Image 1 (cartoon, helix red, strand yellow):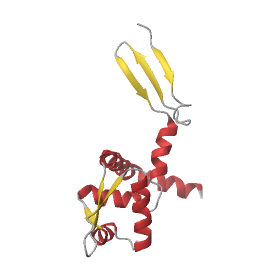
Image 2 (cartoon, one colour):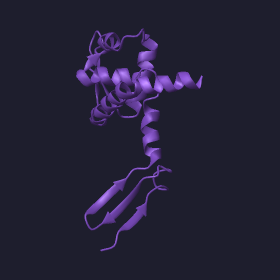
Image 3 (cartoon, one colour):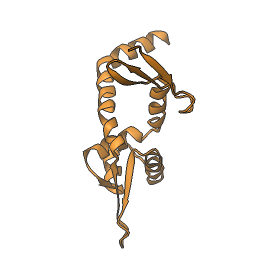
Length: 139
């Protein structure tokens, strides 16, 4: 059986993803544009901190603000949570009670992203000194 390749770039808005069918099955080949799209989701200043804090447990707004720390304002926290919720990485639970009780947790795709964030942190720990040294020499 020959390997057949089917490009899905146009169907997915230029993502660069393709599907290859070979003797050993079907494989999804992810292009660089897909990695760029993931990084685009996490470019907000607070996105990674929020995701890591929610990776521990479901949290209410104040507890999440304390866990993220670094002086995040209520407005910034709300905007970041809405953005992550819009992308399907965070789920908002509103109990519709008096007083209002709202909790946030990671969705399944958000949880699946945690090992990637941990790997990025590990990579930074291994290479931060080299990168900083190169940056200093370049300036």
